[in-house]
Amino acid sequence: MKFKLPELRHEKDAYEPHIDAKTMEIHHDKHHNTYVEKLNSALEGQEKFQDKDIQEILKNLDDLPEDIRQAVVNNGGGHYNHTLFWAILSPKEVKPSDDFKKAIEDAFGSMEKFKEQFKDAALKQFGSGWAWLVLENGQLKITSTPNQNSPISQGQVELLGLDVWEHAYYLKYQNRRPDYVDAFWNVVDWSRVEQRWEQAK
Image 1: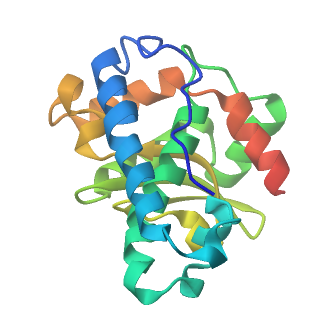
Image 2: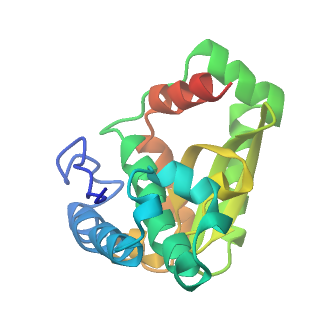
C-alpha cells in the first residue's frame, strides 16, 4: 500500500503562540510529506511489504532487505513518529484523568518530576531526535532516540513523543530548545496519550 500524509486534526495556527503556524506548515507539509514520499520510494517493488502497516514494518526491521533498511528506518520512522506527534497536539492542554495522573505519579514521583525528567531527556538528546514517554513491559518510562529512530523498533509502545529536531522549533525558538519543551505542555492532549496507554496495557 502507498503511505499517505495524514491530515492535521486542527488548523495550523491552532497551537499559537506555543507552536507557530509557519513552523506547522513547513513541518507537516514539507518535512513529513518528504518522509512519506521517500518511504514509498524505498518500498517500491517490495511486494512482501505492500500489505503491512508502518507499525508492523518498524517492529520487524530485520525482515527488510539490507539495502533499503536504513531508508525505511529514517523515512518510515519519520512518518510514524510525526503521525503520533500530530495526533497528541491540541489547541489547549487537555488534562490527564486522575487514573493516568496517578500512573505518572507512581512511575516518576509527581507530574512535575515527570516533566523535569522528560525535559532532561529532550535536552540531552544530542543533535536531532525525539524524547518519549513509552510503555515497556507494563512500565512507564522516559527515553530518547536519535534521528527518526522509533521506540517501536525496540519493543516499546510510544505514548507521547516530542520532536526535538531543529526544524520543529527553530523558526520561533531559535536555539532555545528548553523554551520549546516548556511550551509543548500547553498543547498536549493527555486524553489521547491515555488512550494509547489503555490500548497498550
